[in-house]
Length: 354
Image (cartoon, rainbow, N blue to C red; front, side, top):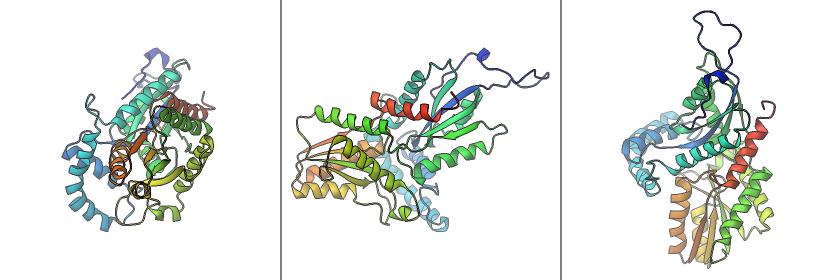
């Protein structure tokens, strides 16, 4: 984990303590950046552990357990770890022996800590994953151990979904339920329409297009999909994605035809939010579109779904169906623009504490 330890003298005790009383550390403010998660390695057992934790979450798969458990344990976890392990291996950060999602989230935490260092060492920044390591519980415990009696948890999902933002809250509350002395905890809201976020996305598009030797005929804005049923149950995710797409188009001055919206990564037999990214890419190529760009503004960090699925699988789909020039526009990651967004969200949500 990325910690910012401070000298013991900076912690203040709560009045005079009786003999034998444990040291009390408080007075710090913690910020915990959280992202989806990552396996510890790409071989079978680490992948199986990661997938089991992920696919056991009722927020992710809400199929009745009596039906889902046999499918998950007897079929999916016997087959899927090998396939997904190969996918992860194709985009693995071999230098650090970890996924790029972990590398980028750590970098975001480090840079945010540096940006907030001016508050007399009062703010401690750390990071965690909802699935895999480092866990949210470990992150909360570590911040509390450093004297953080107030903690801001920041789900790094611009658009709210029960399967992403809400499950971070669930896991944090689960950890809090086991604490004798709970810190005061806030959760940052989604930032799908935050002006800083929209400007950062637009700037990243402009900068990337300026590096190309071609001008894409279409820019496809791809968001991670969820079952369509979640929308009818009241999840605001689709609305958040549509608003991000609209605001980004307006910022760039692009029409719906030039900048389109789609949803990727569907899983299982039921209908998910449409239009589907892979089907859209195929249709565009077959219709005669020769140059295409894809951006994934629903991801704060590049990961399997962007590096392998969008820049890999969808590039192949486009080229196999007649497309000629393809480019993937990276996520904001720990770039200057990306850090401006995270810092703006954190500073806003820390108001009243700093």
